[in-house]
Image (cartoon, rainbow, N blue to C red; front, side, top):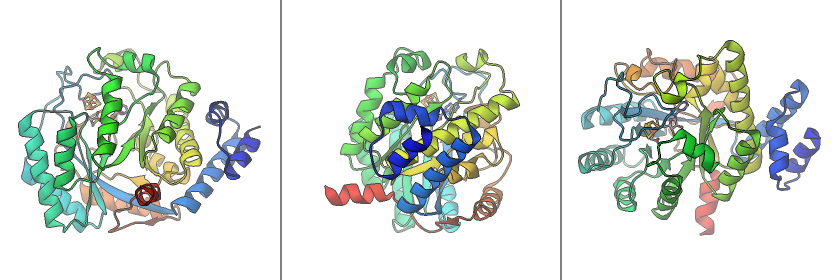
Length: 365
Ligand code: SAM
Ligand code: SF4
């Protein structure tokens, strides 16, 4: 059955929600290997065996939102809040540029106030001008008005990551307080598309109450949205959050199964969406040291090494045991590069690495 579905995908046929669910439910080792091999072949054919680096700058853990799963949510009083100054963000972006990373991702908790919006606009413009537009600038700064997205786009940002988290409305409502709206998030994704960004979205896997059917629907959502980039990762509890308080720390067996689910989602997303960029999330490495490389072997083609100053890293704990919080940027570069070339991939140094899907979409417009 599974091999038949993979053959159907190989022939270029669309998969149904039941077929996608069947692929996500694979547990037999032989079938799992066939799934991962198929995803890797699709990756090789559509985006190549190249891993692109995006230097991740986690510039502030101040957030006006209160998502029940997230360690830096507004109500977590155990977090020491920080905001990098403009100079610091700029310096880290230039470090990434000089380290030959083709892109940076600027991420933070959500803030919509004018001072923050203006600061981001200025720093994006500075990075863009200082690098002659040679470094790709991705933002992951949450929900904003169309005007704000446009201003940041005009300052030089070209990509935006905003996860939908889950496409099941009942589950979304359980993960968020009442004033966090799924409709608004969907509208933000449309705003991003209208303002000319390469749009990335994705979900968390392994959420309490989430089913394989939910995840299969998530993949079909990504396809229907015609996204250019996918950023998804396993949910990992944080003990100071409403959701994490109810879940004891993962046992080794739970980590293994969460990792396996994360890898299957990457593989099936690659098979269904083919030519998009898919990130191997840092959360994979929190479950197993080589989790991100395993992600590359299952179809991901983007890695986001942390370039945030080491002092800030422990304060950006989205989930318990986040990896690399005691390393500096050079250590991350060296250690990841070795591990990636070790699995037979090249690194797209000095390349922005736009998804072929984006290039085709734009030339078809
Ligand atoms: N505030 C922005 C937003 O929410 O889009 C960007 C930063 S937010 C920390 C980035 C992502 O972290 C979220 O989209 C969410 O999926 C992920 N995240 C938060 N808590 C997590 C957890 N406990 N386990 C795994 N991922 C988590
Ligand atoms: Fe804030 Fe993003 Fe965390 Fe939600 S996921 S609490 S918006 S940082």
